Image (cartoon, rainbow, N blue to C red; front, side):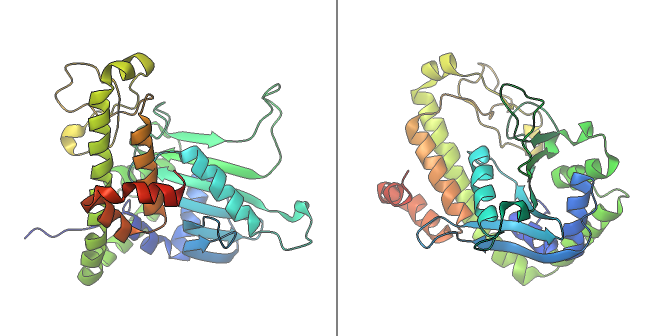
Length: 314
């Protein structure tokens, strides 16, 4: 029987490795090119619930320095609404940073970092940095102190900084190389994979996640077929990735070009049907909330869909 191992890009492994404060701090430093300094607070799977009836969030790796806070997220498969996730994560994080009566100038800078195995925007950039700017005068940047970073590991070869390039190459391909941070991470990944009881427990859970992701892909194929002609008129496929033959098939598309039967056919496109959008959002939100039992139930019994849609307000 083939031994199954987890990679750094798998969420449970990422959380386990990033639970080491030194690793987490150095990842942040490599990504941002700054020195974090003394760490005041560090936690993985940090759960923040702003109100009793409001939606909380689970942060993969949360780090509080003396002058800024950092949240590092791993995204190993496509999720919709990444920009809305940025917005909500930012608001929830900020709520917990000021005590009642404290002035706004005490709000520290915050950095939210998404490390993605694939390009969530389809523009081919290895890195996307988002800062708030004035529409009328783009050179006028807001000094709100919130910074959003998206790393596209699929384009690691285009990263100028050698340390960040090595980190993203490891995320994408598992190549270790000589970088000390990558070697330290890989050592912890290997050590964790030797804990076979933990690994098998993780795989039993990840199977549900993969089943849910499969359900999304199946739904997209069904609705793509039904609305193919309309989709071709309204959207162009983006983010088509070479290398599906190597086992990387995470892109999505509507209106794919005829004849791409060799496997270059999973890019993302505009023109998704409303039914597809609701299903994908439901799966993403249940995964984010760790509701794996609900995912399994709805995968086995589609009649539960409408009830979940109503509960989640989708």
